[in-house]
Image (cartoon, rainbow, N blue to C red; front, side):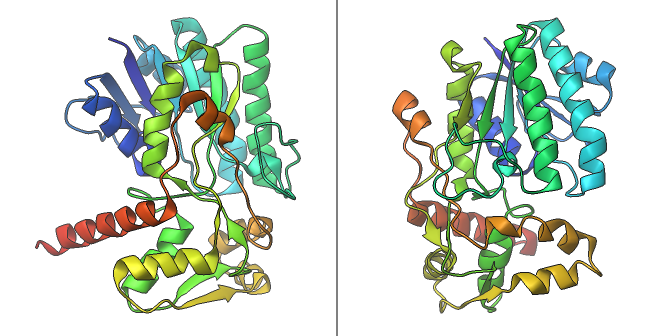
Length: 317
């Protein structure tokens, strides 16, 4: 049986991916700084910035998923992402493992029209430049024949397990559940694609099992057409059974808050993703693998159910 190595287990993608693989009877190793992992997995602790530790945890794997999520801080990204990518490429190359890099769309920058796998790399932010650099390095190593790898990209995501990293979860689900109005950045009428976390968990193993998928960039299945911020909040409100209320936070407010808040400062350079339509096209994946994205209404309903289960668990009910 193939051994799947999840580097950067936990969070929005690693958690459901491990569950998906284990449900299929696959051998799974989860790797994280904390050493956390699900029942049934081979759980390891490692620092991905340490080359020897990465080589150790990749040992015996046939499919390695790079899922790491770093602190949302440019300084951290500049320091750690290049090291992590070099370490993982080196380990996969020496151990003969295939690498699947879970990526975002920051390297595309501001795009007019749908983002596809052929969209020009033209980052509009410093964090986008970091992502472009590490993706280009990986692709150059693939072209040189030193590693077998692919890049799997998603839009901003929502869904179960994304409660700490998903802006629509924080600004829509949590606020509406607390009796507050939902919020969006910049424009409530801009269309915005969101990738469902459980669709990523289904799609990544399909890529891992397809030899011809390697050496390519893939956009993971994402529902179309995208909703506006107002429509997304309206569907969340419907699932919660509350009044749909939504307001837009002006870009200048976020930039002003960045003077006092490091997180707001980091978010400020990404506002180009919210002041216009953000459309993510995953038709290449859907044609090749036949996996349709979960419709927004269904995904949002399950996100709300997961939120309620989590809230009930915390309250001890």
